[in-house]
Image (cartoon, rainbow, N blue to C red; front, side, top):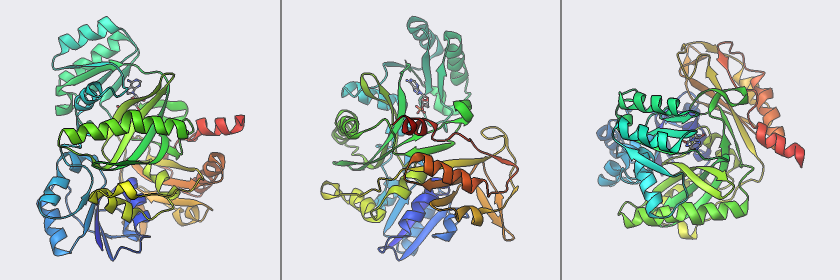
Length: 426
Ligand code: AMP
């Protein structure tokens, strides 16, 4: 079959790397793709906002399945437009992608279905939001309702900080995303990411991960799209996974179906594991980045039939197999990220780095020019490694990084610290 993958990040490189192994694929395209993806698929320069051009490409090239990586095209309805044209697409419809696209929608769904989450209220004006903040006190969390590329959440340690966040959002600091604001209870616990594959009716658990959102070591510095991750999450055992499926994922699936917006695709739950059990922080309507860069190396089964089964409503009788071994990924970013950074700096040593045992390098913002690899974005490379333990995977990833010559890049040196600490206690 012929497949088109949409996206250009490290997540899509990891998906492409895994899918390219499938004996089911005849022609494999990626739009727009990147330098790393070009080793697995033919990259085509389509704009992801131009749904008509994507449909036309699919018709011209006999595409049997489109796999959508990022959230923006999902929330813009690319799956609806492809399906209307009779083309099979992996990912939620626009209505179902509201689980990521609107925090208020998800919070209301949780409340109506008794899904455990932080107590909250929604606001369309600053005065009422501030009154709520003062009546609840700090710490408290202020969130823009819409998609804000990871910048829409302020965990405020004081009422003044929370009120400033409200002012920033309502004065247009985050554009349209901040037109409505959710203020919610601060949850105490340890976070984890949980991924489920869904076909509208049935959800099956994929795997778990923990990521590192802050830019610098010791979880310091500004929030980023993610500086590293490892899988599985040490705080989710089989019993906890069962609770997450029955208390959070399954009722969400039932609610979405009842709303005539059945959820198909990957449902990525950001969770806080609290002393009372798992609570939903947020949903994402797609695979995580950089979590996919640790999930794919652990997946033993062919990914393509799983994606097809999700599209076709056939997950009930489906099973996926995983390697027990952990995987860890370290993000290399351009100095200055998530703020201002420069592009076009030269990266060397990638082949030597990839030769370290257990290591796979997934590209995000890179560009090939004149036989050289140049940095072309904020998050630039993902150095993923597997190992018998998280400690071994970590040692391999950092051994690979030591072979990469890129003075204008930086990375965290403590990815996986929690899991390594846990391992040394056992
Ligand atoms: P989100 O984009 O909703 O995942 O939020 C980004 C980060 O903010 C999360 O990964 C958490 O670290 C933190 N966060 C969000 N909501 C809460 C909450 N209610 N309590 C504590 N931390 C939170």
